[in-house]
Image (cartoon, rainbow, N blue to C red):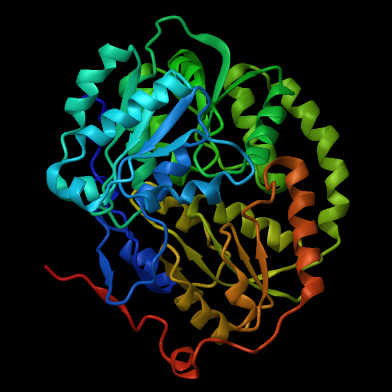
Length: 462
C-alpha cells in the first residue's frame, strides 16, 4: 500500500502502532507486541531527548545541492552544529521573534528564501517545520506556491511540528514522503545495475564503506538521502533495487520506492559482523546476478577476520546493549562470537514492522531486562546498577553516565561498524574502552537506583 497520494504521512503510532515507552522483560515485550496492535504505554516522567525536528534536520542537512531553512526560533537550528561539526552545511533559520508569533512569519520565510537563492542558488530548499509555526498555524504552502515559480526552484516543506509523535523516527517518514512527492522522478526504464543505499543517521564513513563494498561486486550505488544529493534523490526511481542500512529508519522510503516507483526492496540485515556482512552481500548479489562475485569476496575477506573474532576479548564479560531493534540480532551474534553474554538491552522503539526481530532472540533468556525509549538514560542507569554488566555498548553518543554506575562505556556512534572492516573497528573500540575502566562514584541517588526501573512507565488508558 502506497501513501504517496496522501498530503502527509501519518505518525508511526497511527501507522505502525509504534511503542516508545516500555520497561520490563523480553518475555513481556514479546507478549505485548504479539497482537494485531501494540498496546501503548506512557511515561509519567520522561527525560528529554531528540524529537522529530532534530531527526529531520539530521536527515536533510547533508544533502548536496540543497539548503535548509529551519522555520522557527534560532535555537531549533542549533542541532546542525552537533550533526555536522566536521562538514559544512547550508543551514538557515528564520529566527522568529515574539512579534512574528503574533503577526505571522510569512515575511521572515520569504526573506530567508530570497537570501538563500541569492547566496548559494541551490536546486532545492527544504523548509523544516517547528513547534512555533505549528502553534501559529502559519500557511507555509502559500509562500511555497508564490515563490517556486518566481525563483524557479523546488521548495520542499518538511511537515514536522514536535507535537504529534513520541517517536523521532517519524521524521524520517516525513522526509521520505516529501522528497518522493516533490523530487524523485518516475522512470519506465530502469538502470539494471544501480542500487539505492538508503541512510538516515549513519556516519559518512559507514555509508561510504558500504558503498565501496557493494561496488566490489560491480554494482553502481546511489546514496540517499543523507550524504546524497538532489540528483541522487531524483534518480532513485530509476534504480533496479534499494537496500537500507537500518530498517527501523529507512523502511518507509524503500517501501514507497517499491510500491510507487517499481524499485525492488532488498530486505536484509545490516552488514554487521561476519554473518551479517556475508548475508548482506549474498542478498544483494542474488538480485543483480552477481552470486559468483559475492562468494569470491566472502572467501577472500572472511579468512582474514576469523582470527580477530576467535580472540574472545569479551570472554566472561556481561554486556548491556543500547541500539536499534533491526540491528540487535547481528550485534548479539558478534558479541557472542567474542565470548560476551547479554545482561540486558534497550531499544528506541518497537512496532508492527520490526517486531519480527524480537522472535529471533531465542538464545537470549526470556527474563532479560528490556527498556524501550528514546534516551531515558536515568532508566538505563537504574538497570545497569542492578545488572552490574562489564560493558555498556551503545549505537548512540551519550554513554558517559554508564561509568558512574559501574560499566565500561563504549559508544559506536562515530565508529565505522559496517562490513568486514567494521569488525576491526568494533573490536578496537572495545579494547580502547577497557583501558579506561569503570568506577562506582554514581551521580544518581541511591533512592532511584534501588527503585524499580519501571516506576514511571504505565499502561495507557483511554
